[in-house]
Amino acid sequence: MEGFRYMDGVSTLRLEEVACVGCGMCPTVCPHGIFTVDRGKATILDRDACMECGACAKNCPSDALSVTPGVGCASYVIQGWLGGRKELFRNISKHANV
Amino acid sequence: MGRHRYRIEPRLYAVGSPGPDSPVLVTANYKMTFDALRKELGGQNAWILVLETGGINVWCAAGKGTFGTEEVARRVKTTRLAEVVNHRRLILPQLGAPGVAAHRVREECGFSVVYGPVRAQDIPRFLTERMKTTPEMRRVVFPVSERLALAPVELAGFLRPTGWAFLALFLLAGIGPWVFSPSASWHRGLGASGVWLAGILCGAVITPVLLPWIPGRAFSAKGGLVGGCFAACIAAFFWEALGVFQGMALLVALPVISSFAAMNFTGATPFTSPSGVEKEMRRAIPLQAAAVVLAVTLWVGSTFAG
Image 1 (cartoon, rainbow over the protein chains, first blue to last red):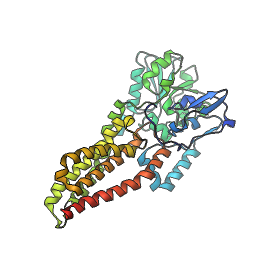
Image 2: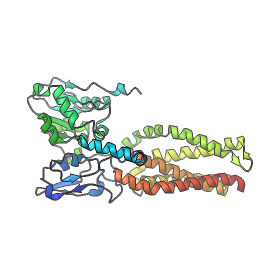
Image 3: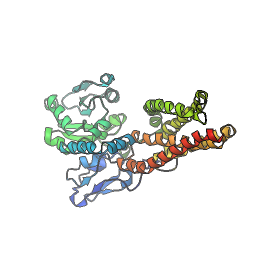
Image 4: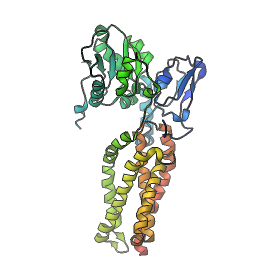
């Protein structure tokens, strides 16, 4: 997004190229257009523009993408710090019924 | 809190007079989202499949998982969509993707997912151009109009903290060599409350509006900078009346209030990552806390120095 950049080098987004099947879902769902698919493999063009929404990993049919999804929100982070264990449990149960 | 007034019943709705070949668009049961979609579809024939998201918009519900794979599959079955339409295609808003695994929806209910544009206003073009999207349709934007529209929400969020802050400020304002003075409490308290309000205004309204043009990345830094400029202007005008200690207190307090309020705005933007916000807060909170202690010390200390 032009004019809007946030912290660099923090995104938990990872792409395992070997597992990628080049289906093209990640460039479709990413709201910041950080992916491209070239010669049957996805590439991350701009990792620092990732907001960790989790859309790409959720829609990756071969589990080539992983990210710790969440909301980039100060009060959400404070809640996480205060109720660390509760939050962790909720995240685990959320992933369990995905 | 009357949230149900913004909710609509989750089921299949018709726009115009749709037939078995008409497209099916999936959305949340937040009334404003549904109305926006229905308005953009005016003049077309289409089905709208409304999911139960508890009256929450698509993006937030997808983050929570209520706008999710299971709910899509469940609603397709309960509405007997397969008997209503001939095709097996659902158009989902792109911002629902964090909650929905397109490939899993197909496995669970036989319908394949096509992600449509981010904004409802692009849907007519998307439908007429055989479900092709442009890169612009796929990107979130954050124009000044949206940042400004968030100001009342941000300010409302600070109502309760403001009540507590005023209470604390009027109490602290009365403390001095005289132990506690009601008249000092009133006069100094008014001034301090004004500084608090100015700080909130800088952090929750001015910083969001000027966001892309303020240097720096961390919201707390941007807010601190805006608050600092504002405080410098006030201090320049009232330096004589304030004196060194109160003037210094103002120069520290206003930026730190603004810094905290701006940091709070991270949650309202469509580009801040949780990892980024956490990194920012780990650095900013100790500095903000130290600045608060310094500002209070200078301010209360000014009565002893006078």
